[in-house]
Length: 555
Image (cartoon, rainbow, N blue to C red):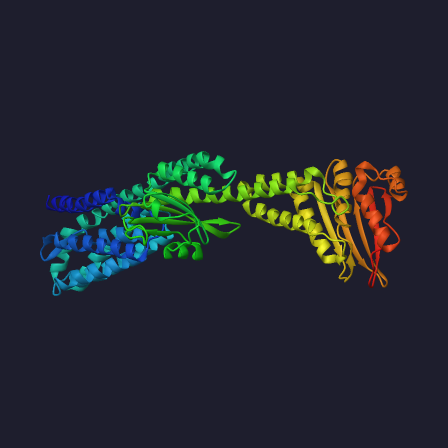
């Protein structure tokens, strides 16, 4: 009966810890700590102090049994370490163990309790690191029972041959060991709060998508008015006091409290914003006074990124302190990613619009009218699913466009022309995928050639060769070094050129569907005296022309 009474008393004291933790979990700031994946140093300190207090409180409220204390100290030590890691468990174990020793230095249980408190701290850290979350409560109970059993063993060894130790162990061993079941209850309670993160993330992701849907039409043409509207939508949906969007230097839009103090185009003066843009890391401040808006006390700054580079920031303000909660952070991070993507898509659309208006000279470009549209559509379709690939294609397209827009009648280095070819090929590979295989056989040469004489041949090989047959095809691009000249060739494994087309090219009768090939033939012939040589293969077509070494003057 006495043993049962002690066990009941132990559960009552453990219940106090559980109830206290339950009410703490309802406090937003503490709840935020429980739901975080990684704690900041000051949060580790707070949690450690809390569990140290639990452990010491457990010692003071212990049931006295012949100088020994039936208490929940080990429960507090193991629970803290299992939930928050080795630093919390070890420090709590040392502090509570030393405290237990100091209040009863001459007692037979003082040193055993000191030793097992420290051991419990070490074990808790090990469980936190190497045990799956779903099994921590169960492993924690087992570890607690083992630690208490070790305590009983050390009491027997330390007190021997004094029968007092055996008498104490006979009375407290069973209640102390069985009482470790409370470790599982504490761990499960806290983990249930952590588990709410998934539901929070789902709700906040839904909110972010709703905001994205509302703001999407305004990203089609980014200007001062559209950005202000975007900020207004965000402010209303998350009930913020103010929202701002910046680039890396200036404020682009600001709505809400303190709006009259900001002017669009003003240079960013907030050091926190500059730090966020510089580091690319999120800045959270729950108790700060903004330089220009002294009534703002909570601030969340999230970098906006395009192609992995910071291009600006999304800023969310609240007038009350400690409004930047975990759910808000989750939503804002997702929203910032969506905004970054939409801004990048908007820039792609601007490139598309500019490309549509560009007038390229007929002789210097053989781009089909739909090429730009198809290329940009390929980029746009990759933006969300393969952003890294989309960024590469944007670079390819911008290089391709820049090359065409900067063309001149002067001869250029062959490597610059080959770079243009590679840009073109990467865009086409994005469109046609596994259907297109391109092989480069490039010798190291140093010659200058007319611009846009290789790319049109590659385009013909793809469009009129490989894509005219079923299944995959190969285009081979060759630059071969000979003693007196450099031979440039493009071959494919496609349908093969019509012999009638070859005759028309050779006799200057421009075929409507082969203008690119004809232009290359005519320009090469004008410059070098001999045009391209076209050969229909058993499977496909081979086209070559020779570039003499040395200086060549255009005619």
